[in-house]
Length: 267
Image (cartoon, rainbow, N blue to C red; front, side):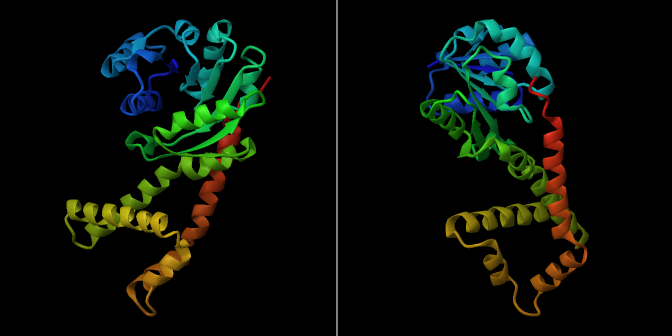
């Protein structure tokens, strides 16, 4: 099976590297980018081939659209006449609906929309995946296996993609923001920055691992840490006083709204 990655940016190159690590023959991987130099650099790094987008699509059984949303319409127009019957098209561009792509690709083309996130760089990504109208169960499984190379995958109705974008797509930014604040607090309290960083990062990693491995609800885990009259309770009271929970809810609503606004019309 030949896979063409159209777009050699962060997510495109990340997926290419993961495919090679998972055992895909680099000879079956093709890279295209509007910057020929970038495509050749990424392809050479992993032993893949660099081709112009139309040629890459002609050679492919699976085409991954990994360009910015504003570049999608032009790219699809460029490759339209080169998409072979039976080709699976997987889009990892934010805000681009399956309907938008189906209207611009040859009639009957199978499309899957995916919202990944940047932890895919370390094979710990979270991808939300939605099939289009013409996608078979077998093709959906192909797409799921493709994205499983960089982390976990869930399949859900496309109506939920804006929420996926707000939660997991943008989620790493919120976590990095909190980690940054905790490190700064450590420095404020007199710790060396590298010590504060190690304390915060390992605490985050440990807490996330506890949630995943124990299956215990985070509320229960939080209560286990919060001894009556203790330090954690004092800190949590301060967070509630500053309406941090409400701020997170508002922030994620804003992200979902912005995701919806970024979606171009299908026609």
